[in-house]
Length: 275
Image 1: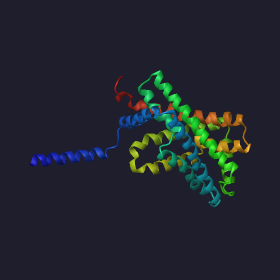
Image 2: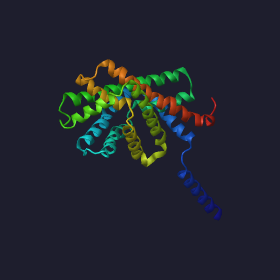
Image 3: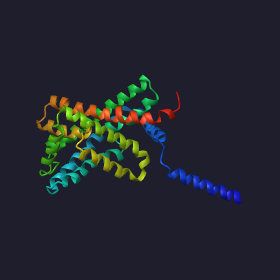
Image 4: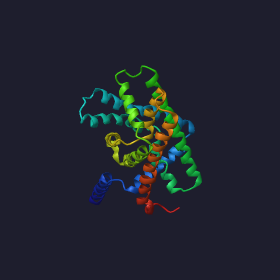
């Protein structure tokens, strides 16, 4: 009887230890890899609707930042508070499990690192293309709402326009280099989510605030700002694509995939089963 009680106590202690122990990198990798496989298996229709929804909802980042900028007092510390508004769109999209392109620069790449076949690589590119296109469609749709309807109060729209000019006016070179940290940060959020549990809200809030406070460039949130100026006739197609969209896209991919994902894979590759 005492042995049974002792065994039960040991079992409970072991369970408590395992519960309190942080997930090993290999386990985090496996969680994200399986999520990536699920995403790669989703139908085109599901990806499109989820991507459009993400493109629409990410506009809350622009809207939130514009509202803070409009109503906060004009002083240096307001900048740090203002950028909390940028987190709103990411909170809605990530916690709502919508398809955001920059999340997929790590999530759908991990299955490719394990199963290095042309088929898996093609599936990843297919998902990237669908999700990015859907995100941009959603961004242009909500930007049209901002520009062509009285959906936004007249005192907030000037701040939206100011943010849009700033985001798209850095030049191609600066947009590219500032896109790399943003890609790394979003990939880092995805990497930390399996371990975050109840802290997910604050994790997303803090690190997406860092993107805005650091003045880094994000392809989907930035597409809303780009679309606002395009609809207003203030930004031509050539400048929008060549001066902003493609450089930021390249920077986000390099940051999220070529840097963070390869580093994440490198730390677990020796622990993965050989195929």
